[in-house]
Image (cartoon, rainbow, N blue to C red; front, side, top):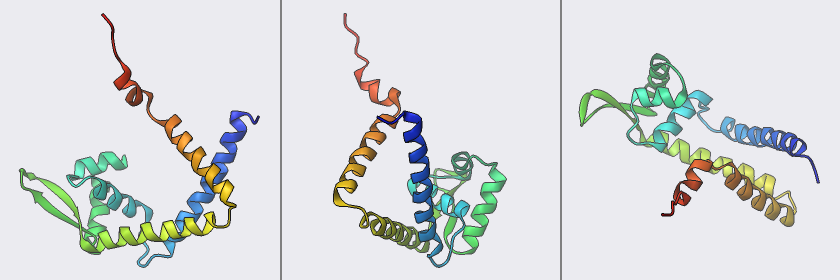
Length: 155
């Protein structure tokens, strides 16, 4: 059996290949969205109540940097800033229909690129990969989250 460090090195190499496939899909999209701006759109898409401070925290940047990214996205029609109806001092970030289409198109391009690579693999290898990825995901889960339900005390 291979040592865990050998497996880790193989995974690292595979992740680099995976990132390259996904990056080619991103670069094939028109317009090409810089990675930082794409990350903003992804964060906003995942949380419909995103404001500037939550975005800066999610990106691990200072609020002024997050604001500049939003300026660029707003100028290209991919993001809107609106007053939060619950607190008019807060500014909520919203995707536009153009950015939703862009994200859907990117997701489709990425899946097509991954499918193309996966189709070059033997069926048995794809099945093994799927099992291994599911096992990895389970092993990588936060132990505090998975055991929270099992924290039972007896009298």
